[in-house]
Structure formats: C-alpha cells, structure tokens
Image (cartoon, rainbow, N blue to C red; front, side, top):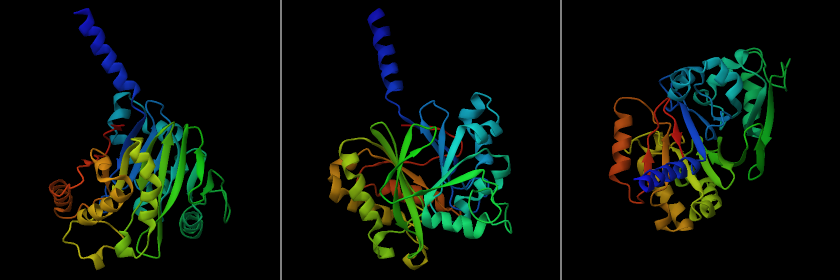
Length: 311
C-alpha cells in the first residue's frame, strides 16, 4: 500500500512540475461580444506574472476568470499587478479596446508590438482626440505605457515575467499587417497568431516563413501549443474572408507545416482555436468541421472565457 501511495504522489508531482505555461482566456471571440474579445494572459505556471496576448477584453475577462475567483483576487489587482505587459498583434479594436479603456486604472508597463503596430496606436488611439495619450511618445504623452518595438525574428525579453518573445509577420487583408509571437520559457514555447489569412489567399509567404521557423521546436516536442484563428466556417467565400481562416484553410496551412516537420510530428499537437465569429451557428459549425476533418490528428482545443489552460 505504501508503495502505491508513493508511486501516486510521484506521478502527481511529475505532472505538476512538467507544467510550464498557464494561459487564461480573457476573451475568445473575433467580434460581436464586446465583453469577450481576443485576449489571452500567458505566463509561467503559478507565477502570477502575465503577458497579455492582445487586449480586446481585459476587465470583463478577469472578473470571469475562475483561477482569480478561486483565490479571491480583486480584478483591479490582476490588471495592475499581474499583467506585466501587452503584446498587440494588429490595430483592430477587437484586439486592443480593453487595453485602451482600462488604461486610466492600469499601472506602468510595456506595450510590445511591431513598429507598424505602434504607428497605428500613435496615429489613431493614443492621440488625445480619441483617448488620452497614456503612452510615452506622441502628443502630450502621460508616459504610463512604454512602446517596445519588436523586430521581426529578434528575441526580446518580457520584463518581470521570465519569458522571451519573438515576432513574425502575418498578412491580414493584404497588404495590411498583423503579427504572431513565439513565447518561450526555458526550453518550452507557445506560438500565438493574431488575425491572419492563408498564404495562398493573401498571396504572401508569411505563414510559410513562420512554419519553417517553428518546425524545429515542434520536431523536438518543445512547442506546447499553437494558438491560431479560425474565424469563419467553410461556406464563407474566400473573397469575403477579409484576412481570416476557415477550417479548410487551416488544414491547408497545417499541410504546409507538415512539409517542414513531417506529418507524424503534428499528431497530438495542441492547436488552440481562437477568434471564431459568434454569429448565427458559426461557432458550432467551425468546431464540427475541424473535428470531422482532422486529417493531421492534432489536438484541437476550444478555449472558454475565464477557464485556465495549463501546458
């Protein structure tokens, strides 16, 4: 009996210590629900030090997050103290409105983004005409937020988190730009993509470049999850995708990824499906189409607002 108990405790401890990342979805949809728009807190397991991957919804998501409710952590404390910075993939409101609206109650921290994205914030959001300029550049800056420009392919440190990030270009209604980011803790990584169209539709090679870059991480089983959007069901005409993916197009891109990794290496890969458009029965249809045509046998995960995921 003692041996069984010790073995059980050993297995439980091994499972706990093998967990590197926690991801808290503050918002999961790609529109329509202003209290549930794209934003995911990512950080080292149980460290309470997060980078927000996009910021469409912040406070509403914090208030619904089970992990913070369980420990009775005030939403304001999570905003001010637990979120250490923001990665903003592109300039659409469903990816940054929460950061803008909550900026008066926030504390000093960094905004990590490509130079093109920071230009959008400087030109359209933190300009005093639409919102007070809480950033450190531009007209009458309050200097609460510091812009940190990410160079494509360069590894940068996320302050006070123990994480590094590496940015990649995406195409979202070519030639408009979006971006992806590879987040790394030690020898484990998660890659998060902002809005993106398929290379074939967008007539670019941005996703191919990303797949080639992360293929060695997948082959060595160090990629904990791929977070990628699927906004529309397959019935959506390609000319009306507006820089987004369908289940068929995601499979097309997974096929391209498989050319760099080998098909077998994708089996069991955690693929977190983001940015579904919650119109009519879109969400249920997208889930069904992905699961029914899972030719690469990835592990599709459909995040729910407020429900923590551990990898």
